[in-house]
Amino acid sequence: MEEIKFLCDFMLGKLAKYLRMFGFDTKYEKGIDKIKMEFIAKTENRIIITRNSYYKEKENCLFLETDNPKEQLIIVLDKFNLYEKIKLATRCLICNELVKRVDKKEVKGKVPYYVYQTKDEFSYCPICQRIYWAGTHYKNMKEFLEKIKNAGGRSRTGTDF
Image (cartoon, rainbow, N blue to C red):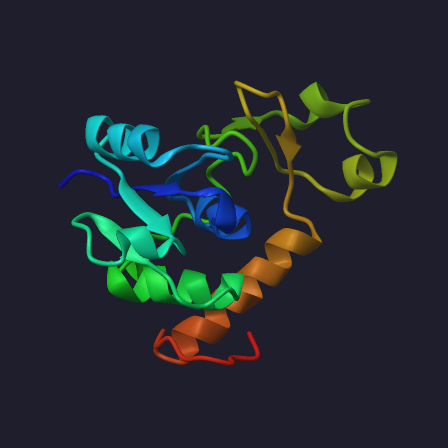
């Protein structure tokens, strides 16, 4: 089965980062018109995720009513039954590329001193060269994932996630 891929419009930048953090191929486009968005979705086999009501009834589109990014994430995970496909911290949050493991000595001088002293595992993006490690953001997303899994993943308005 082909991997699910998403295309988030300019209103969903935070959701795009969350989906990438969870390992899903998610393109994010700012300032894109409807024609280009639909062209990208069709040629790259992506599902459009948007808050633009123009896409409310369109095929291969998910219209989100809520503006809460964590609630949006739960809706996407529920809608496409993605809980078992999550691969935390495997994509670059900035450019969407798959990150690669890198030996600790390769990041010396490229990460804060404290991080280098306290972390042993690092990844980097081969495209934008960003370096990643399991810090607070990773810990928070892991806790968030556990909360929504324990809640059965059901989306609901006004969650305290």
